[in-house]
Length: 352
Image (cartoon, rainbow, N blue to C red; front, side):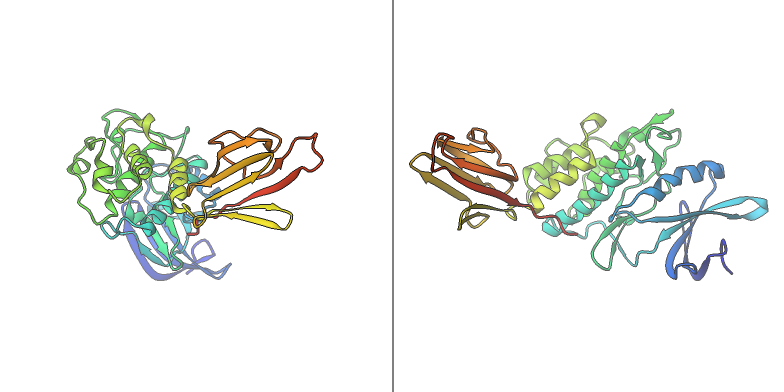
């Protein structure tokens, strides 16, 4: 039997808090999909409207919503079904990671997916490890948008709903509650700690959660850089305005993943100077000017400059960040024998 004249169930199914999930074959495109029948807690039109924003969302780290269909339910009712990308893999597990580079990359993948979700104007509201799945290529995808709301349109609730331990403190109010994407930032911070093979603080298990000490992440995970510890600590803030955006979290994590992986080349005629983690400094000296460029693992900057030296026709200052592509000039316009060097940075990308 085909559902909506297209989807053929294969027999594999499961039930969850937000509905039933059935593995199906899309007979039109010849691919596996997951068909999720949503539990009816609201009218069909509103439920469809809430899911439409997800159809437009395209992210490597978010399960793709392929189709929304309405089928006949029991007693003359209508059921909303979501056709979702099928991901063959395993869910993230609490307490299964060590604080190493692989873990930072995993957090970066989740932060990247959440940043894409928030950019699309969606609040997930149920971020936790078993709503993250690792596919066969090691790519982490965010699942289960059963509690998702559109920011600015449907970002209020009168019910306490979510997963205890991951729910932000502002979601525990007794009256109508307004919330924002900051609830996902809080859950991300909790998840970052829950995934590690470390004991979680008792504050997270309280209802509502109590604040953790301001230095908790630094002391709990001394292996992390200070900047990473601080941004995770900020995610856990009870002050909503103090929590970072997931785009900020993503960029900080990427900064450390890519540390010492940049390269810069300075070319003058047939002479090439390269700056990288193995050779962090180039000191160019001439009778008319000197320029010292340094690489600190994150960026290239001017360590010192003197004499007739210009970068893109501007005067270099100590500590100035080098542009990713520029021309360095030795000698003023009054000189016949001026020297020109090109400076180019090769910027690596995080590979999930």
